[in-house]
Length: 325
Image 1 (tube, rainbow, N blue to C red):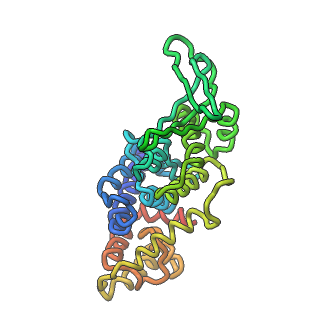
Image 2 (tube, rainbow, N blue to C red):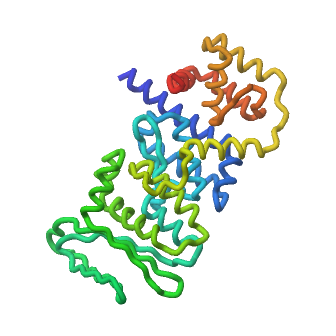
Image 3 (cartoon, helix red, strand yellow):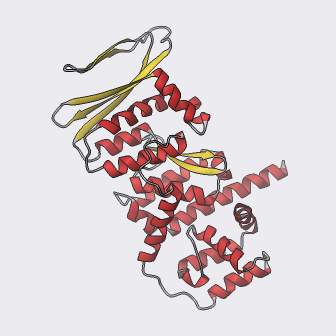
């Protein structure tokens, strides 16, 4: 019991340290958010991590990259909104937009005022027509057994009241589900995943608008979890892209002067307390500040102070060293 409590305490400390690292990069992340409301975003991230213990087993780097990906699209992790999720997969955290996140991106410019997504079952009164008179009639069965899943559809309503819809049958939804990297997502939220499949299909056929790049990126992040690669928008990996965003924003920031002895103090502690050579010390520092560090002199005063504080927490450092391998 004592060992379990110690492990739990270490996990909590690591989660707190991660949120504090987001606070450290607050200005950089705020630049990515469309509304700049960084405090609300960080709070939603903290709650999402606390509610999913499996995220504590993910690398801090992957968790940071997934968080920044959500920030870039302006989708926070507030459960009530259902815009975005952090999904653990084989020791790494993945950013996954929810179907409501796609709807938010589609409707944000204002040309499309509403997107609805529904799931159709065997006992429902459902009919659909294409051609010159496209229409959907759907009266859900609210009494008794709904029967087998038939399909899902999404409808977009434009500012001029015109509508556009896409329907995806159950067998196609099933094929997409089979490609997903983790079955847990579908087993826990089958209705939401079916709706998202329909919204994704609709998004591909809507007129291009100001949010097109964000929608394309959202599809790519979702593909990374779903195991779909046919419509990935870029040849560079998602990790490479997000690392570049953070490094560039870090370089843009004017760096305050640092206490002259902090770099030497950091390396001295790494060498004497944790038996690390210079290369290993730089790897550890990179994990702590959540961006690549090639020299201790690159650290800002705030970052150097943060590193020194972290070096005093032995269990946290041990976890970071295990992550580095």
